[in-house]
Length: 358
Image (cartoon, rainbow, N blue to C red; front, side):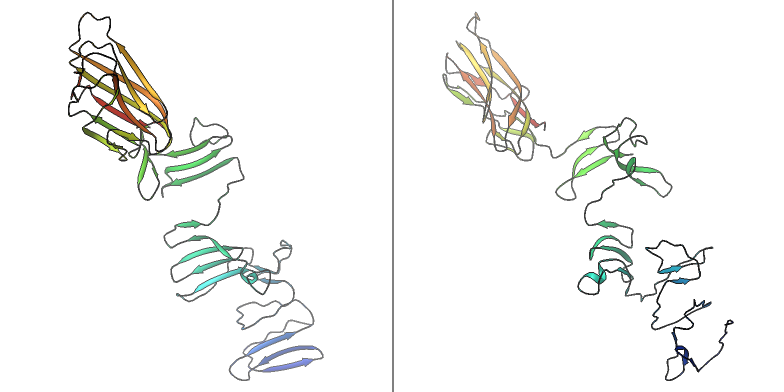
């Protein structure tokens, strides 16, 4: 049968056995019903508008090509030349959708999908009937679930300016293409062209590595106190806790009542010193840092001195193991002699410092 051109046709009925071509002008709707028309391919050039179209077999729009992947050749769009595309035309307060279904009931009709919301100009991607990734109108991308960069020899995420200037990145190093020149296989690298900031517990900077490599941790527990009031006539043959009158700083508010309380379990650097005056016939002093689980001591023996010193200074440093809630104090024990030793209010020689190392 030769090609048939139908132009400006308002009504036609042309039955021929079981093969039928109908253009029906009844009512306000015109339609074309094609039922087993010679069981041949139909080539339509131009624009087709239809309320419903039921086609058995594969459909090509703009092409009659074959050989596409068998898993996705039901519908092929495009001429194979120049730009081609599909447009989903929605209202400006509605959405456009593409769904991947594996059934017609429950969650099956929307098991997977792509949704563009014109109301806020965002796009989301649906997996197992749940949104897993979205991009808002500003370009902010939100992921729900794990991001797994599992392939390739150079697993890297980079942030760049519009002019392609590198600003920051992360990389799981395998081989070659290192983001940081000194990294090697199995390293995990973080890189910033400027300061690198770390935050926890809200929008608060907890740690900073500046461009020169200097690390600062403004919330790391630390304290410094000194003796602003004298402690006179300390007793003999008993432990005396040193009192501290003035705080220089107390990051985390962990020092009170002459006692430091560890806020977390870790290793702490402790340093202390005192000056004693008015010594008289003292055999020895035991100067110490006392923690909940251990005492660190420094013994000074004066029995061989030919005369009593006018004053004496002690100092001690220790790296101590403390659990959260453990305490640390400074004390002195005078073995014998007159009960007249004074601990002076010497800011430079009577002090107690501490810092969490990690």
